[in-house]
Length: 323
Image (cartoon, rainbow, N blue to C red; front, side):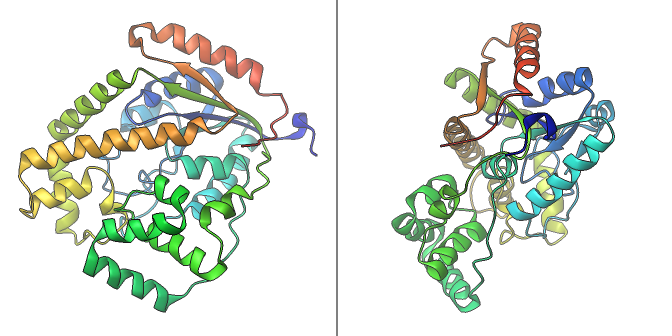
């Protein structure tokens, strides 16, 4: 076992969408001389700014940010690529004498990095994939998702039905290995290679839902519809994982006259609330998280002090993880 004093330090801030990670992360990063690595699976895509709630150019000018705008929307970004790129960034940031700081809400991506998951190559079976795509085309995404739920309910719980690529991959892993993807992940040793501190933000559920709905209204005012229209004009279609993201799928359906404006916004708000619930469920089973309730947003300074106190006390202890 590597002594913790010899392990690279890694600070992590997680929480559901709209809980307030960005504002806190900037103040933390400035005070502790951090560089931020986005832990969001959608912020890697260029041209997808409003719907993914990226830090603004002004915010990114305050603190260096990484893993933002690194791919066009037709790139099949994966957890394995995230892990590989983030590992290199952590090493490079540490070599510059700065503290690497992961900020985001994509649970599997962040957990895989913090606890050094190993993604064994289960191989591929293209005829099997084609069979699943044909099933999807004929019966719809919910039927495909139900197929996954029958063999791997844990993975089905964390994957949205519109995440077709990952649903099919989970089915493929079970098909090739005879073992559900969730069991592959559960079998990981889950020991951190880092001197690790993870902060989790939470708040009253009703307030969080209100913030989600207000954020969506703000995204619309900032030009979400125009952003999606431009992506469609450039040829980024609904078959792409990126275009199945929250905000993009619903607005694209509206632009194709498949639903009314009112229905699209209602659906987007509902889907985002459900997504936040899944995020919280994922993070709450990560035992190493130090939770901070930020329900009282008028007390920002107090929350910041609380987080800084946790960081000061947590960047040296033993980081072995068990779930």
